[in-house]
Length: 239
Image (cartoon, rainbow, N blue to C red; front, side):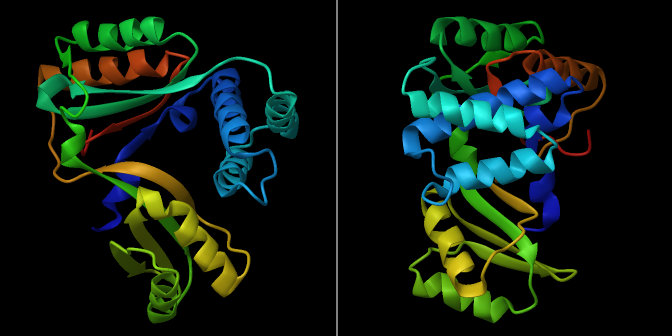
């Protein structure tokens, strides 16, 4: 697959210059993940990974703790996950993942990003069939065979393992995320993952040129301004 997966995700939390927006998005994601899967990171691997990622992005501890405490309370906002997809500037494909307490508002806001850049939002499945939904785990290790054996023993359907510069990149179906991560931790102890996420990985890539470059930048900037948007995946390279 190559290391191109690092360019396959436009993470709203990572690209925003406004710290408050970054904290809000992590806080919302942590709250939803804790509320749905349990507030104990040791028993909720998705929450544990999210907290680790938030700390690497320098999200303050009080933001993390507040989100978990809110989830423990059982009340709070009723956020739901929403996913939108369509064709963006230059015919590129985009998937937008959101957490929202008002789906009608969020859909309207996301659709506006498409229409104001001369594009059209699609229906469910219009572009997602051209992406692979994968768990990606990247960490320092030098024994590819040992990692593969540990994953296979845990019945993980490994898609690919790459070895580059002393780091292994493990790709597996998103449904095997918890199983894959748990197998690696049990086999090799605590691991400091460089990448520990579920991503939509495009099967093919495209480039944008001419006037479409400015439109694509406007498109992603408009989405970046939306509080409900958590992440955007696209198949544009070399922007």
